[in-house]
Length: 114
Image (tube, rainbow, N blue to C red):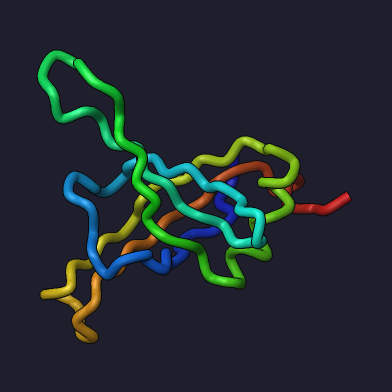
């Protein structure tokens, strides 16, 4: 595995970070019918002893450049390792908005469209 994208910004659906998101959390990338890529985070159940189902939260979409790069790999169902690499809450941000960034690792050959 090699880094395909070191750091890509996620355009958050709401300017709100979900509770429980932390660095190195696994993220799933989903290719939508409209051609956009949605980043989905799976959080474990808040119930004790592992009772309950994990929650899936759509964080937002990737930008156009990252989408163009990763789209061929998602169309081939290639294995990608996606992790949260940076979280910036609104009160620390110069523009007053929350931000979240991910990294994408995988086989570079999966990016070549056949």
